[in-house]
Image: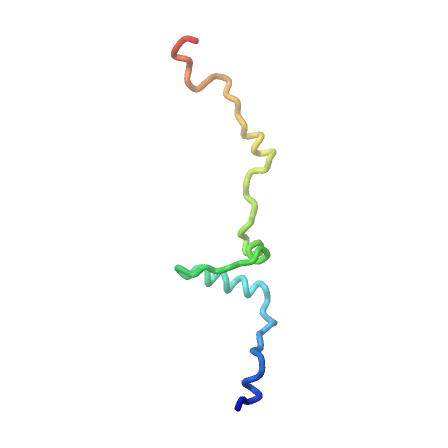
Length: 77
């Protein structure tokens, strides 16, 4: 015979903030061999997709055309 308490579904705490979940996952990710899973929004909030590449303008400004070749033509062409 089962009791009423045994028939109740497990109660999940829904008061946990998204920041707390991400913090726990980051702590778990530091455990050797453990593969913490993040959904795309969590990964973004954790800083996984911070864009730190050069802007297109900076990349164009760094393009240097050499006026003279680095290796002079040794065959006289």
